[in-house]
Amino acid sequence: MTELWRKTAREMVDLLAKGEVRPAEAVDAAAQRVEATNGAVNAMVTLCVERAQADAARMESAGHPETPGPGYLYGLPISIKDLNHVAGVRCTEGSPIYADRISAESDFLVQTLEANGAIVIGKSNTPEFGAGANTFNEVFGSTRNPWDTRMNCGGSSGGAAVNLATGQTWLATGSDLGGSLRIPGAFCSIVGFRPSPGRCPRGTSASLKLFDDMSVVGPMARNVGDVALMLDAMVGQHARDPISLPVPNEAFQTAARAATPPRRIGWSATMNIAPVVPEVAEICAAAAQTFTALGTKVEEACPDFSGATEMFHTLRGISFVAAHRAHMAEHREQLKPEVIWNYEHGAALSALDMAEAKQTRGRIHANMCSFFETYDLLVTPTVMTPPFPAEIRYLEEVEGVKFDNYVDWLMHTFVITPTGCPAVSLPCGFTKAGLPVGLQLVAPPRGEAALLSAAAAFEANCRLEWQTPIDPRVK
Image (tube, rainbow, N blue to C red; front, side, top):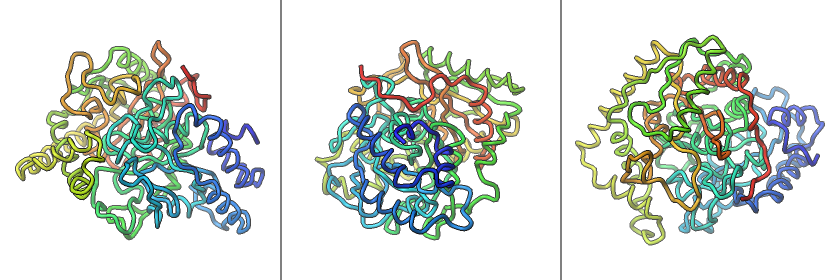
């Protein structure tokens, strides 16, 4: 039982379904692995082992459901990002404002996962309110990259990615507005999957952001098959989430198992808007070319993303005003500078700015749809740079291009967000310094099944010598 952390999520679910491992044993194995590794990486910031063991005891007493769905997890322990509520468990959102808050009810995604046999063992670290792609905050401190603990693990789902990379859990939830599922996936050499808006229900009964179609919740895992399993466990329509979608007719695991390569893909290192560190571009270009061994035609091609960065900043700014008016009025002194900047940027926008952003969004969505009439996937680097020292809050310059804000170095992911297209970051190699690099695959709207199938084909064709989980590499 001491080596259960090395198994894939699907292997664990199979053992749990057969009764060869009990849920309580799985909880113990996860808790032991957290104890062994968390001191080096600071990824699991709130443990709820007693709650998890109580859930395990109830599941063992009740037995398996007669007709479990394709995403039923049979008592597998998972982590929940600390932006999301778990009833009876501390939820700080990485902010001193909520340092001592205990959640009264669970988010819809937690309710859905627990109904599908998941057991929550703890909360993963996040930057304050999920703002930024370096996972640190004033409540818990910095989460470290397990490949080199001096480095940034990405964000904002950085704690979740490190949970997975170190074997603390087999599956983890994350969320994604500007790339927060995909970026830590790339920086930690795991799979981060951004589903279509509405695919996974979000929020609580008290949430005021339920019509937001930019931020999504989604699955993270160590491989594509496990991500598909967790996506099957997360999907479903919820009456209180107005954009949530019904469970699809075919399980996403079926698509992943098919591992069907795309016929034709468009590859772009820069997307005609973004600087890229040459070593990252070379690693990702080589990874994209491996599709040719599967019979895929690989061409240099990209939709027109002109105006996308300005559009995203406007839409993000509006969301920050909606989310943080009370925080700014009552707790401004406790907010980190990046949150304040983003709020003030949004508050200064005019109606004309908002109208321009909506028109640009519509044009870029049309560009994407036209692109996908020719190509099955858009393939790019996930991030323009490898992981960098954790003490650097964000990058102000890459390859001679200067940024005037804390998010522009993430443009490979955030320009995809407003299109509504599903996207995944896959491990694709390492720099000469031994740091992970991720490849982003983007599919047409609502194209999760085809995306998972193509991702599985890519994964099977790669020699994944960098497979996780690993022991943290303290340097």
